[in-house]
Length: 112
Image (cartoon, rainbow, N blue to C red; front, side, top):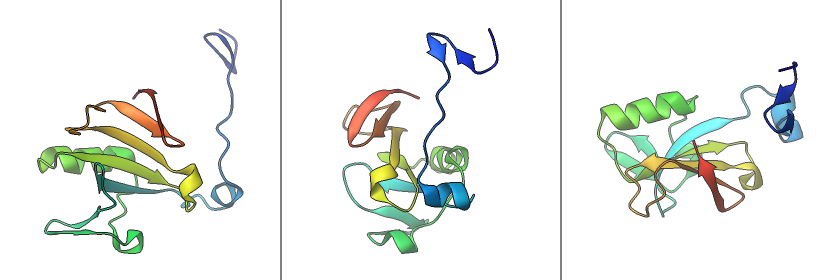
């Protein structure tokens, strides 16, 4: 297959907010309790304030910590500073049956 091609047609570039293009650290990664606005802050505390939440840096790190510590019923949130661009990854024992799905623009779209 030619460079820049994927099955079914040419590859499309992911469009990030302009601030993300300018700042490589614009994406932050959080754990959020499924169905709530509570974000992981410390081992003993969750917070409603995103500014206080722990930034895991990568989705792999967030999943590894949740898995190793037995944190269930949560989702990974990829935050780009504007909720319109947030990507939500379910899959850690989510009680709503969304295990392994990705939420984009408020809709569940496929699996990760």
